Image (cartoon, rainbow, N blue to C red; front, side, top):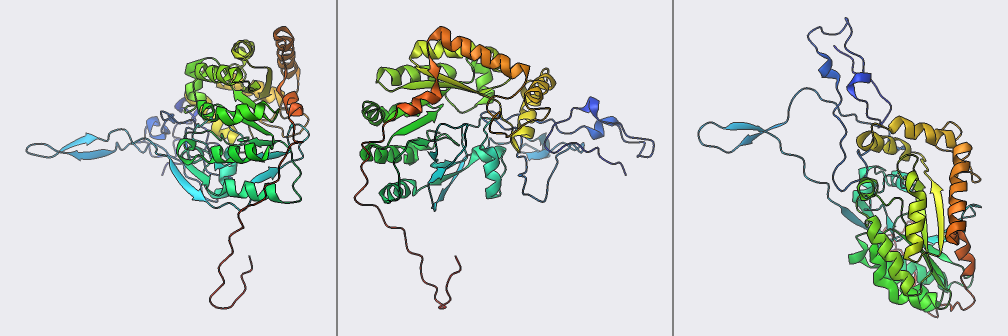
Length: 417
């Protein structure tokens, strides 16, 4: 029996690099037998496959066995066989979660904030580079297509926030909303968790920082403008490239680059301090647009700018490699070589001192380009905006919903948890 060639988990391999059957194999087999089913991106989705999470013990690999899927077709006389139609598009499924906590705290020296809040797990925007993708592995789901199609809404997020702000131990500080997954992703239109969270921060006069690539943030200008007038709100709009064709594959369900520029203009005209986040910078894909994105954002009203070099932690690395093979096969090797040049020969280095910028000559050139463009445009780094926010007027809530009590066990046994 023929032995199928093995390849690294999740990385597509075209036929020319696969070995042909040897003399020990069945001589009737042809090389075409060993061609793996080509991995093709779905319209409106960023990931190419449902790559297994790192905690899963079983993996599955698709290959073409030579049989074409068929179906019976209606017709007069004898039944006819027709090839299957294209599979239905992947639907988004939202699961409700009753979270136990809502504010995340960090002591990372390379982040300008220590408190963050995420009302959703997973993100329908489908950005292939999202560093939050590996978190779906904790749920037993794939960081690939599951991350962008099987979402979790923390339905009690506003109540948890109110309870947290009411604690005597809470020290008022800027809370960054949507740092892992976009708080204004499409399901927010119906759920409105972000709106309720922002209303609580507005009423308590607790400063907030928002980061998004969605035009839905314009819905909340009334709250953000009122807070910005008191130096209690800033917004960062992420723009990776001005090329709409690249953006459609890189961030398939996010607003177009032109629409995001309009968001910057609308927020700025409302008096809300806006910065542009050029993240990530991908060599030979979005990197050529660095200065043009800065110029367009400043023309639209951005006051600050920042950039982050592509990060590929855990499962993001093979997912990104698949994306490159599907959309940019002509430059995939060149892109990965440059990324590894900035990461000490690896796909990713998580060191706090270098993870956002990278190391080496190419990383230094990127930083020089950014700094020169910033001086020419008269703008500062966006991290400085956090220092302008005022938490001195914080009003602690006088009332907060009580945590639900766990029902008593009917057998009289105490619950361990």
